[in-house]
Each structure stands twice: as C-alpha cells, then as structure tokens.
Amino acid sequence: MYLSRMSAILILSAVTTVRGRCPSGPSSVNTTSGGFEFTYPWPIQYQELLTQQQSLCQAYMDVHPDPSISPIPVGTVVLLHGKNFCGATWERTARVLLSSGYRVIIPDHIGFCKSSKPAAYQYSLQQLALNVHSILSSLNSTAPLTVIGHSLGGMLATRFTLMYLSLVSRLVLVNPIGLEDWKAKGVPYQSTDQIYLGERASNYTSIRGYEQSTYYLGTWTPAYDVWVDMLVRIYRGPEAEPYAFDQALITDAVYTQPIVYELPLLTKTKVLLLIGAKDTTAIGKAWAPPDVQRILGNYSVLGKEAASAIGTNATLVEFEDLGHAPQIQAPERFHKALMDWLA
Ligand SMILES: *[C@@H]1O[C@H](CO)[C@@H](O)[C@H](O)[C@H]1NC(C)=O
Ligand SMILES: *[C@@H]1O[C@H](CO)[C@@H](O)[C@H](O)[C@H]1NC(C)=O
Ligand SMILES: *[C@@H]1O[C@H](CO)[C@@H](O)[C@H](O)[C@H]1NC(C)=O
Ligand SMILES: *[C@@H]1O[C@H](CO)[C@@H](O)[C@H](O)[C@H]1NC(C)=O
Ligand SMILES: *[C@@H]1O[C@H](CO)[C@@H](O)[C@H](O)[C@H]1NC(C)=O
Image (tube, rainbow, N blue to C red):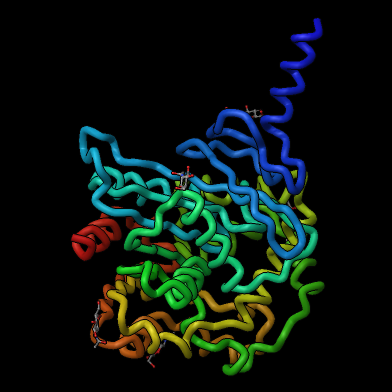
C-alpha cells in the first residue's frame, strides 16, 4: 500500500514540470514537460539553469553515433531550432549527421517546447546563447563545434559564434532571419502586449495558413501537419499563457537585434548559407504598411548580400524553388548540400 503510493508519487514527479525543478527520473522520449506532450526521437534530458533570479529547466537531446559507425564521434554538431520549431523538428537532419558519425546536441530554447515557460524573462540572443553554452559546458563538450541554426536559430547560431569564436569552427545558417533590419526598413514597433494577443489566438488554421504561404509556397502535404500539430499542442496546452507571452518577448528580442550589421565579424569562421530563395519571412510583416511589406523578406537578394558581407569564408547554396524550411520541403537536396560541404 505504502509502496504503491510512493511509486505513484515517483511516476507523477517524473512527468510533471514544477517550474524551477527539472523532471527527475529516467529520461524519456514522451514527457509533458514545458506543458508540451509530444514524443521526441531520442530521450529528453534536462539542465537546471539558475538564470535571471529564477531556476529554469532547459531540455535537450544529446545523441551519439552508433559505435559500429563511429566509436568516437567524428565531430559534434549543435542544432538550433527556430521560432515555430522544436528540437524534435531536427530529427531528419540529426539522423543524417549520426549516420556520418557525428554526435548531435539539440536544445529546446528556454520559452519553447519541452523547456520552461517563465512568466517573465529578459530575452536576448545573448541570453539564449549563454543558455546553449551552459548545456555544452555541463557535457564537457567544448571541442571545435559545428553549429547549425535555422530561422531564429540562425540568428542565435550567429550570436553564439560571435560570443564563442574559439569554439565554433563551422557555422551553417539555414534561412536565418535578421539578414535585414526590419525596423530600419519601416516596420513599426509593436508592443509585447499586442504580439501576445496574436500569439494567444494561434490555432491550427492560423499556423497552417502562415506556414503554407511562407514555408511551402502554397503547397501542403500531410507530413507538414506533424509540425503544425506540434505547435498547437503548446499553444493549447497547460502552459499556453506563459508560452504565448514568452513568444511575444522573443519576437521583441528578434525585432530589436537583427544580425545583419555583425555579419562582417564572422570572417574567421567557415560559414555555409543554405537559402530557400522563395522565402519571404520578415518579422513584423503582418503589421507593416503595404509599401513596406512589399520590400521585406526578399531571400533571393538577402542570401547573396549576407554571403558578400561575410566574405570569402562564406559559401552560398541557394535553392531557387524552396521557401523558409528547405530541410523539410526538400530534405534530400538539402542534406546533400549540407553533407557535401561538411565533408
Ligand atoms: C505520451 O504520454 C502521455 C501522457 O503520459 C500519454 O497520454 C500519451 O498517450 C503518450 N503518447 C505516446 C505516443 O506514447
Ligand atoms: C564533466 O567534467 C567534470 C569535471 O571533470 C566531471 O565532474 C563531470 O562528471 C563531467 N560531466 C560529464 C557529463 O562528462
Ligand atoms: C483560428 O484563428 C483564426 C485567426 O486567429 C480565427 O479567425 C479562427 O476563427 C480560428 N479558428 C478556430 C477553429 O478556432
Ligand atoms: C577564413 O577563415 C580562416 C580560419 O578558418 C582565417 O584564417 C582566414 O583569415 C579567413 N579568411 C578571411 C578572408 O578572413
Ligand atoms: C527581390 O529583389 C529582386 C532584385 O531587386 C527583384 O528583382 C525581385 O522582384 C524582388 N522579389 C520580390 C518578391 O519582391
């Protein structure tokens, strides 16, 4: 009787996120931490972060290659997800890297997915980079890294590289945002309270509508639904309110911190830009006047400008017919370009 009650308590504590205390117990692929029930491809681990006067949990996956392929990893790759994504969205890319012998480390940023949803947090790319670095430190994994970032994760990967230049030997940017300064181009400021209202109203229809036009050029296949359903689980889950506010704070951090001015500082790192040229993503496009909307997010131009700002260590691969998420839209072409460059 006593024992069974104890084990019930233990089982509950393994799947419950107490804000500020990380889920304990054996790591699992299916948890509800961060108010997000979703099965991940590999066990989810947690790092307790003491940050900004609070104790938060940062979730991540750390996956080693099969020893029969590579007893010692050929390298470590950190995969940084974007705003409408989670660590789990990198599954296919991670499998390709693992099969080539790489170890992969895949965080869920604070405010996202399986990680804590703080009621308030001073978001900046620097703070998120510090958080990623703290996972790597806890794993003693500070050897030369390859960092791959998509969308917001591309901005973060750039910031991380600039903060830890000696750790990053190769940087891969997949349709990164911040390649233009939206505010300088005329996007008005919107308060986090206003953005929060839009975030709270997100549902399957609104998320799919946005992804269909921006990521997939009007096309749709059932495989894309997985990633919409994933987000709906958070937007409609038990931590929906802090999640929506965190997303609003993150949007504010992104809007105010474009990376375009700092690209020339990346000269010491080898950089691969993988750009779906039909992408039109731009922060604040939805609330910008029509004449500003028209000039934003022209990735057929932004990719070339970024490569030229970085200089001769940049390699640009453009996918003329793809949108914001080439790794999901055309995984074979995308991974071939990535692995050819890494080799
Ligand atoms: C994941 O866990 C939840 C809650 O514990 C459970 O309801 C759900 O069926 C599980 N999903 C899978 C795919 O195992
Ligand atoms: C990292 O190194 C420290 C100090 O050498 C050690 O105590 C710790 O167990 C190591 N952690 C991992 C995950 O290897
Ligand atoms: C989804 O959200 C949109 C816009 O926020 C709204 O117009 C629509 O009624 C919502 N649909 C459902 C099924 O809730
Ligand atoms: C390219 O990167 C290497 C280090 O990887 C550096 O030594 C070299 O100076 C860089 N080239 C330029 C033009 O900055
Ligand atoms: C992007 O910029 C190019 C070069 O200025 C221009 O030809 C093209 O029409 C623009 N595309 C869009 C969608 O505005």
